Figure 1 (cartoon, rainbow, N blue to C red):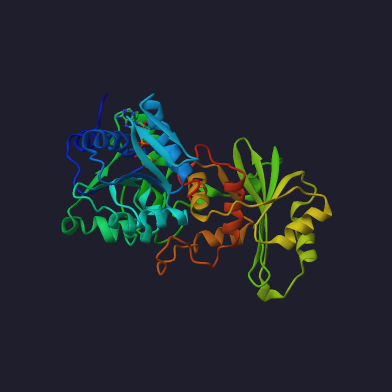
Figure 2: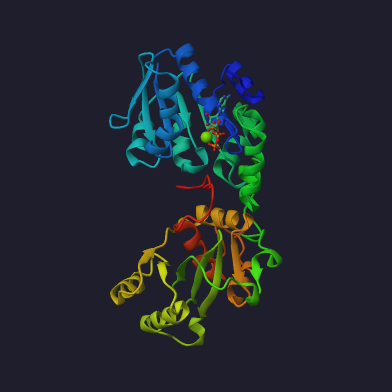
Length: 397
Ligand SMILES: Nc1ncnc2c1ncn2[C@@H]1O[C@H](COP(=O)(O)OP(=O)(O)OP(=O)(O)O)[C@@H](O)[C@H]1O
Ligand SMILES: [Mg+2]
């Protein structure tokens, strides 16, 4: 089989006590580490401690590690998620998902001879510390893979940055390390990711989410004069970010020739006087007019408003999928792909693009919760209705 440069390097070396392989998406990290893990076990296992394969959840471990291994080592590698066990050439492997409380108890009480970890930045810090602490045999080895996150992520600060002190090997992979990728694929995915997601998932950098959330928003490209809007659309939806004290923000969306247009907006700030759910429902009716709406996608926490829309019986209502980062990543892609256009009349929507920024005071990636109302209804429709071609790798984070 053909190997990329770093893949060959990893396959050829004797694993030190700790190795972390990080880098951009599709760079062949998991593929080569799966092989290396099996080779390491078969060549080195002495039976002094347990072997663990650990993912964020058992399901993600299955998708990334167990299924590919079962295909590649047919007959020699078997696994059962129910029993949380796998075997390679008769050697037993324990399977765990790190967000399972029982897993932490189990690791704490164990002596491990080899641990293979998938998607490390999505683990919690205490769990990774426990894993390292369980490497009690003289020949114990940890091998883990991850995409980069922010520079303050514990995998970076506690391990990668202290590589020399800990005797930890870290290897950075780029797409050139994966010989199976075509130039067309690399060009395509490189274009799809924008902002901080581009830096992390394409360049493989540990960078903070800072500045504007949608730096790719460009009035010349995304805003359409009223007289240039289509006269009719193939399909319609509405997006709703509900607010009583905070503003209530709604967008009417239409699809025409593969482009999603925000046709008009409704925006009401609580500061301008309190309105009731009935008032908001009437505003939704006015916003929509006579358009045949496929669904209204609403902030999932707005239970009372969702129930009211349902009770009125005119619209199909959906609670929005509210995973913020995957949603933002897909909205960035949608803007980049040129499939989003906004009518000039949506002044609040357009204004928020210039204000919606990452919260630099937060250790986790999250936008500042201000000027995020039209932004949220935008994310709800794009992500819940799956408008983006080629899904973001962030799905299910
Ligand atoms: N040397 C190789 N030969 C053949 N196929 C490979 C090779 N290396 C990687 N691949 C294939 O390339 C694809 C991407 O590789 P892989 O899943 O290992 O990337 P990754 O770096 O783990 O990406 P992510 O960050 O998205 O998890 C997979 O389908 C994998 O089977
Ligand atoms: Mg991977």
